Image 1 (tube, rainbow, N blue to C red):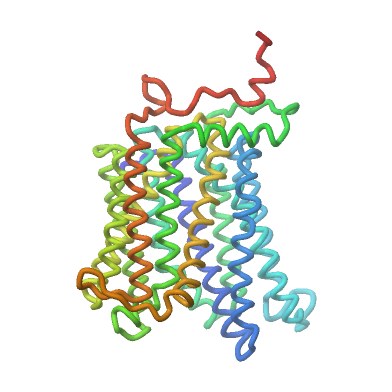
Image 2: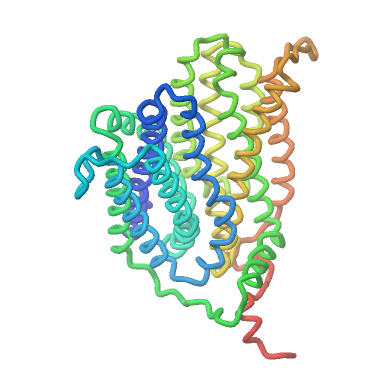
Length: 451
């Protein structure tokens, strides 16, 4: 692809592609190891597996919104290098603890509780580092990629992430069952090493450090929120992200029940359905990257949101596997198209000194929407909608398809609001007035002379 001619981005993309694959491999391997090895036949195994996901999400909810303040104060490239170095050290230590023969300790193995504690601690710290790494990565992309190439850069990154989600679990399973959990951990540690090396080779522009010695954390944080909430364009991005992640969370929570109850198929169809969703995401990312500049980022955002709502509604009405597979492919394509538009829009609507703070609020908000949607879907289908059967205009409705219709209609209506908010939005790199409100950072305000 043309974007890979950009040496700096090519290095960043390669490192992140390998690092993301390592993360997916380890995530799948830990679930399999806890469920089928450490906790086999034990009543606490499901709770232990859930602990991995809790450890992943807690830093997103607690540290994520706050990390952006520090990212905007620090060097983005050095932040990425330090967090990757720390994650490499953490995963290397975990591999040492989980090895069948512990170096310097021989056959002495920690108790099960200590092994689980080590896993949860490393996952928690790894995700904590990620809350600093991810906003810094987006800000660095804004420094090394031109505005006209941002959508292509994002589409390529999303496509490779989709590929990792498809192949990563298979590799994780192979490593766990044939070589041992420690090799999956080692693979993740090596992926961080590769990411560290590629970032070290990037020739990034010299960064002007934000002078904030006398500015409080709360002032910087509030300034970032003012930029986000004071921009129609960024509010549209936030709304579209919340809607798309809500649809994704509901689909994840109810997919297996959709297969068995609505498609009247065997549970083993769940795996191929997920694969088709991933293939749709890859195709959607690549197509969105190709048409983004021609269509316009604003149109891409609201039209992809609209298409996601429509395909979710249509998917809810499917009763056979063939058409459902076609629609799940489209759901994956439209969902990822929303994501392809989000990052370039953030970079083009946000002043550079606020990118970290804006990103650090947007990302956890989307994750929270996904978790809440999944929880709501599971609870409603298990309780209020459990025995629901009804007909509307001659169409039969059950628990799962009723919830899918509800979330699809919500996304569809929300896309109208996204279009309204994105109307006549101007980008910072355009000669016309900027969309982000003219707002001085607290450090600039402190230096400004009194009128």
